[in-house]
Length: 201
Image 1 (tube, helix red, strand yellow):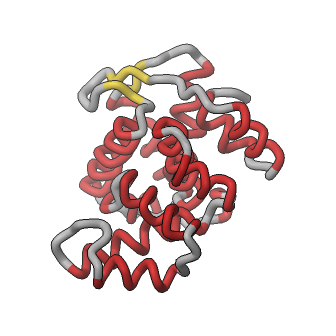
Image 2: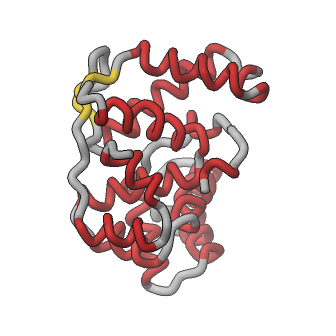
């Protein structure tokens, strides 16, 4: 569970990476190991980025996310509808980043439950202030770190189709999730992640 992870701010340099995650999922299904995918990223530039450092970085990020989910979800990312693939990537980010999961559970979920479909700057500020009070590690981060975290959270939610617009007063779009995905999340005991996505108790 995400609650067992340490708080970290590395997501501020880790975008949504939809195409890259889908590509890596396809390679996993074809039987490629993590090390082989990393080699292909470096040597064949499968993620189409300029520097070798960034190639390796992207490979590590997407593989960390994919390693956190099971084969059912990897298949869905590779072969499912775009909307479903994006929802599962959000799930994989929640599985690997405690602060992002808590944002989704405590802010995004509660917004949907309260039928308040506007995500404002103040929602981020209130959330981050609360986390500062709860964690010495989070309290040690700079204001610039929180600024970057807010930027990345907004961009991730926008690219996933969970919000409309990236400026102030962003409209929340409640995800419509395939029943097969809902049932699988329940079967494997990841109901909290499901609730974070769809705004339920």
